[in-house]
Amino acid sequence: MSHIAYVNGRYVPQQHAQVHIEDRGYQFADGVYEVVYLWKGCPVDYAAHIQRLGRSLEELEIPPPMSWGALTSIIKEVVRRNRIVQGIVYLQINRGVAARNHAYSRTLRPSLIITVKHGTGPSEKVANRGVKVVSAADIRWARRDIKSVALLPNILAKQKAADAKAFEAVLHTPEGIVTEASASNVWIVAKDKTLVTHPATKDILGGVTRATILKLARASGYKVTERPFSVKEMRAAKEVFLTGTTTFVMPVVQIDQHTVANGAPGEFALDLRNRYTHYMNSGNPETAWNV
Picture 1 (cartoon, helix red, strand yellow):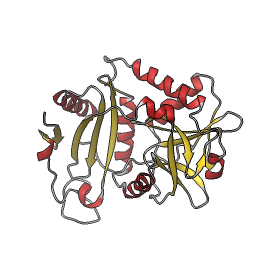
Picture 2 (cartoon, one colour):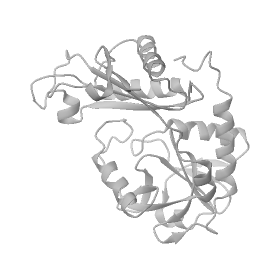
Picture 3 (cartoon, helix red, strand yellow):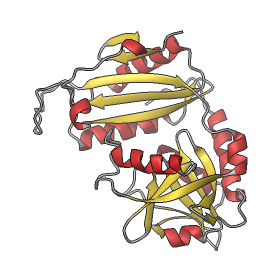
Picture 4 (tube, helix red, strand yellow):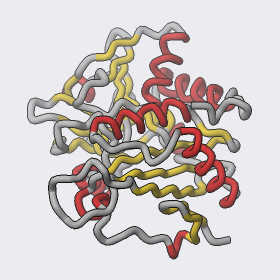
């Protein structure tokens, strides 16, 4: 079955989907995106993803292409046409089409692209084994809180990880402060058993899964703090793990050539992964698409 995409008002076979050569998303990376995970047919944290999408658009002065209700209807139709039960929804909104010029008109009509893909994310086998990450300099722009499609620094970091046969690249400042990973947020369990993750400032993208894990951890009685931590502190932590839309909660057992603790996934990470899976299983199909 051919995958069906939605592009600027039309449902088309994905292999025939096209955007204008002067779309500013193509020429300037002038756009934003979201990735929503579908679990047993239900979107996970859909309202939070749409809220973040709206904030990204507002920060870049890109008007929403339609109401959130209309957008939701289109997304659901793309999911239906592709018969996706488990996988991801990708949506991208660009500023629009115009003759190439750095300055933009505020009257442009935004472009909207929606695609879906089957998939389940990393297996439980991978999570139970844990993953390796590498460290990399954070060379991204200063507004990392906006989910922009300008991802070249992330791509280079992810490729560094792939070349090292690692799962992710953990990014850090010149001062050695960990910000996040190329496509996920980073957590540590400190020596006093406190869960630590970087605060949601302009230095990181405030992950939707990150926010859910914060709620689940606090509701479960974990001691949690949001503060910066260093690469040195991360390497010496009791546990390290990642969170993300398709990553869920992923234990880290190796950073560069350094083994984390005893080299096995820690109890905090595995417990939070189980709690997150239970959270996804508790989704209500009747309200999952509410914004």
